[in-house]
Image (cartoon, rainbow, N blue to C red; front, side, top):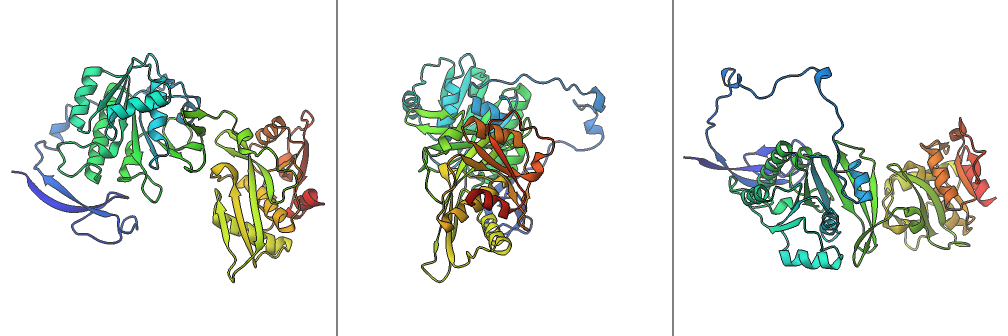
Length: 457
């Protein structure tokens, strides 16, 4: 007879404890332990030398391994293809996470309904078939005879449906709603998510069928469930954005078959998500001539160059303690740049409120944004506008120097394509760079003071 016992498992790292503790001693997370009921059955197999003589696998030399490139499945969505690294790899397990209502299910359903000629099984554990039909009608893509919908939460029943349909692609929406009968805990628990994901991974690798898992996001912004879930899957994609803005960003966090620096941009509309092929034109406001506190930065996310509008407001502190606020940019890095302005350049901003905003609801991590950040702050502080056709790129060091950035040619070409007449770049980026064929004025700067003289005279 199987014995049952209760253990406490950390939802962040998977460590277990016989009793509840407030702080995990392994990963340091607070209040991450949840109770799980497990069965302790004696193992029927013997793990000895003689029991492993008939193993199916055998060691291979490195030069004997075949590295023929596997054909990828084109999902007919250029942004999703780019983030995945060129398409879906057969037998891969892809996890797509995002906040509730951000558009995960809409993105996947829209992609699946556009895959004509590929038999797809969409397993929904959260919505009814009627709800999915209404959504498909809304995005005007309900005429795909190769898409099958099933509403099921039992893992065993899902495998029965997969065996009957024999699909080329499986969608699980969402992994937190699926449960297996071998585990007695409730759906969404650590044990259920771990066991269901491991079983789905085994199915994907054995049959070569790609599987897309949709996952929830917790309040900290990470995938809900055990951290081991992110280790099991091949690719982790994060679908993010502000619900008050129309733009959505699909970002790659982990990818065994491509780069993790890629991102795709979508525009949320009434009839679904529209791919944004040239985000620079949408991220720049039409007219900011004569407005202070606005600077245009030439940034790069993945392999795509962007021109992003940086907005800043500097005002006298109404209360004793000055406020520092940044939207779409790291607040600690902004405080560092303010310290550089005060120490190296001599601008006194200690008693002033500083507000920073990256237009369009984007979150940018490119260090080349530094020069535009301090230029926008200084423009607002002096109430002097930057010329309308000027953009800039460069990383600011702690001593006030402008450090070189990577892929300067792509940044300059993007600025030239959008009609900018002048761009400020780090001086050291000029080495080995030919600017004779360009129709844009390149202004190299070594220090922050030189950049300010070029912008404000």
